[in-house]
Image 1 (cartoon, rainbow, N blue to C red):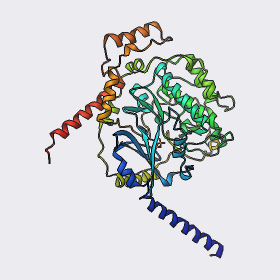
Image 2 (tube, rainbow, N blue to C red):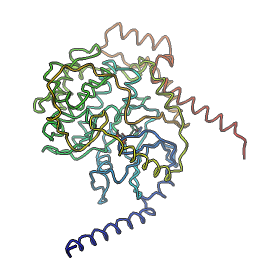
Image 3 (cartoon, rainbow, N blue to C red):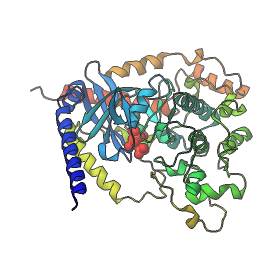
Image 4 (cartoon, rainbow, N blue to C red):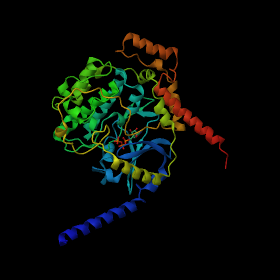
Length: 463
Ligand SMILES: Nc1ncnc2c1ncn2[C@@H]1O[C@H](COP(=O)(O)OP(=O)(O)OP(=O)(O)O)[C@@H](O)[C@H]1O
């Protein structure tokens, strides 16, 4: 080994050891694990994705429900600076969007040797949009408009702060079931918005525009608009528009996209404009705002949610299962190990939630264009949401339930019969039955679980 190479290796080793020492010391610092344990109590798993595990937790000082995401240091691809500290870009971008209403609030973060613990607000009770759509099979246009408008507004405000999310999809939108407000989560693939093209990608391939697969390049806002088009199509159809990369790159040659639900011409037009093959003729975020479909006024959340279906049984059953309270660090270590093994064993090249930083050579994969068979409805996602439980927030839910639906202004654009039937339901039957309302089903289950837990605690023999 030559001298310069040896010197380089020694230097590298020294800096690695210094890094480890810093991490060890960090254990005692204000951002170490012992501080985290003093401030938060982990309650079980909330969801998991390709790059982390998200835990349900409570802030000890005030019992605020929070979500804690463990980000494995080894999976961090991009780093940024926050108050002169090097942190994963995810933390940095969340901090930049602190004032954006539709972005999940970053409350705190901690550094542990294995990675980072990102503490975020956790709306209670909430459901992510994937589960919401799955429960409804597909959204009606009013509900889709109500949610999509908030999502577009949020993406726009992020862009104003030069933040590009890069993984816009239904799984990354959390809906507050009490207010109907959305929160954009998972900034793990986000980066600084720039005007020049990006040559790396870490989001979800089925939401990715064709220019990435064909040219390994994309422009930030144009790619975001494409993902929004995929998201809206998915919300209205209950299935994704494209099954794989080949579909993404060739669908435009087959004429207008097929729709599998009765969708208005205006909604179809907006989707087609977002999914324009040519990024330069794709509509802009501003144009989405001004599109006649999005400009229509929406009914109030209470009116909308009262009309949701009752197909959430399986999901809620699944969600009702309590996870063991964790011995925090040990669990994180074990889970991280398990996750890594799973990730190693997975081939995600064409999977729905596949992520990757290189465009596969689609040109070699493209065979002559055949008409696409109907894409199947979606059953799986990368994470599962457990409805949260907290005694304190039960009161919030309770108080929102007593709010009169009939106080909501009648939406101007609803067809008269529809207004009447909705308002009649709201007025004559003070609350829709739990079977009629997804939202209420979720609320009822969250509350009944709390009741059971209390009964169990009371029944337990006192030590
Ligand atoms: N703040 C939060 N409040 C409520 N639920 C959350 C929150 N953060 C995450 N979740 C739930 O956890 C799931 C996984 O979170 P997240 O997407 O951040 O993880 P990830 O590992 O980056 O996932 P992916 O591989 O999909 O990118 C989400 O789909 C959502 O259901």
